[in-house]
Image 1: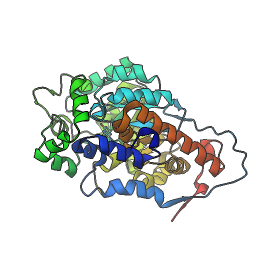
Image 2 (image 1 turned 90 degrees about the horizontal axis):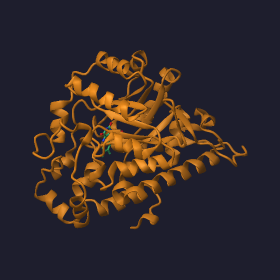
Image 3 (image 1 turned 90 degrees about the vertical axis):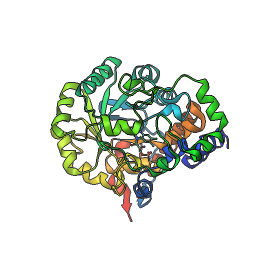
Image 4 (image 1 turned 135 degrees about the vertical axis):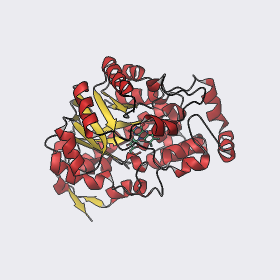
Amino acid sequence: MRLNQCQNFHDFRRMARQRLPGPIFNYIDGAADDETTYRRNTEAFEACDLVPDVLRGVAQVDMSVTVMGQKLAMPVYCSPTALQRLFHHDGERAVAAAAGKFGTMFGVSSLGTVSLEEARKISGGPQVYQFYFHKDRGLNRDMMVRAKAAGVQVMMLTVDSITGGNRERDKRTGFAIPFRLNLAGIAQFAAKPAWALNYVTHERFRLPQLDGHVYMGGGAMSISRYFTDMLDPAMSWDDVADMVRQWGGQFCLKGIMSVEDAKRAVDIGCTGIVLSNHGGRQLDGSRSAFDQLAEIVDAVGDRIDVMMDGGVQRGTHVLKALALGAKAVGLGRYYLFPLGAAGQPGVERALDLMRIEIERAMKLMGCKTVAELQRRHLRFR
Ligand SMILES: Cc1cc2nc3c(=O)[nH]c(=O)nc-3n(C[C@H](O)[C@H](O)[C@H](O)COP(=O)(O)O)c2cc1C
């Protein structure tokens, strides 16, 4: 399969599967336990029908949105994801450049493989820095100081990952950083020599956000140990309130699901929340963000920007979330498979297809602006 033949998420996924060693493909594609929530995330959109208006004079469509003070040319953004240089040697550089070209926001993960400073320079668009809460409070403070100095506009604290999810596919292949592959895993790497050649001929793999804290070379600390040893499961609302105060700007919590927590996020001064179950990678059985969206928007939508992610594969999925009241929608695997398949041109093609789909769907729905998309345009089965 070639890039210009890819028409949708499924084509990119197929192409990524052809190119990537099995353990890496499965790290992206996999989720927790029985992967019920992962499947449910996309199914949730399919249980909701669109009811279009016609004859609304939709020659020009404006799909821009403003979220957490950032104007986005399209209502989707690239949600922060870890380890991107394993998927393609350009990693975050490719995604930052593509997001910048499409005028949208790009999230760098604290487990990113390119420094937040470099990503900031490349993207040009608004940038999110996603971080986890460490036991080492000094490290938490340093990260915020560093992000501020780099010109990051939005801090995003992920609150659904105080411990790692049970990713059984990774256990089966032995996927870990540093690699601890079992025989089956090694055989799968050997089957993709082009990926391996690329990997060894490019710069050494690093986690620049955690330099000096997670040592890759000597194998002193693996990613799963990072979650268990360095992150603080005792994190509380008071701790987060302190961070929100210290940052003094746009601050959002990623992984909020309950109305109660959404209200608390408002109370401590957050400016945004992302309803998310981490793409089904953490708590299997968790409700889909789309199913939970209306309840949260009704409770806090007039006081905080509500975003959502999980299972988004189509422009019509984005429209459904916007019609329920989301301010913007996060993409995860939707851009990761194209990254793995073809690097920056892959991500650009995926974002372009998404842009075209959103524009077409808005016209077919009779909506010239995102604000015109409303709940009356939806029916749940
Ligand atoms: C391979 C992979 C790595 C991820 N890494 C992170 C991360 O470092 N931090 C984070 O907050 N979310 C991370 N996520 C979750 C995404 O930001 C997003 O919530 C999720 O992918 C949305 O679901 P979707 O992939 O179905 O679109 C990751 C997701 C994937 C697939």
